[in-house]
Length: 187
Image (cartoon, rainbow, N blue to C red; front, side, top):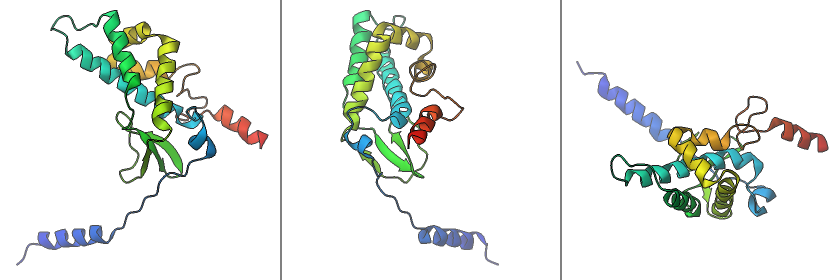
């Protein structure tokens, strides 16, 4: 008697072989295409990407220090944070999943494996500008102090809290419902 296992594998393979996949590039609005600023609905994802890059750059710089003296000097952490902002940002782009646009790239959760991501264009300059704004708003010293206290919490410090990019006004992730309702009432 033959084992049923080979038949199951063939059936499973046939099912996968008959499945088709499709993806299309995000359809960008005028604001997403032409504005010099990061669109409001992408600011939370952008903030998370920036926090991730700052954390990665600081961790890499500290790992190069001699054992026992991992803390960076003021000039070192200022250079590291400036470099984290001045990078090319070419690994980040916008994708659309179920009609909702998100940033995608290192440090960001991916909602779907098969998507088309739009990279380049205005996104690197917008990420650079946002990153520079954070350096100006908080200062390199405060950012580094927060990182030293809790390295994994830099995202929380930068992106969450009162009037921050990922502030939740009604419990929804990354959306400012009050602002959305105001825009809807104007229409």
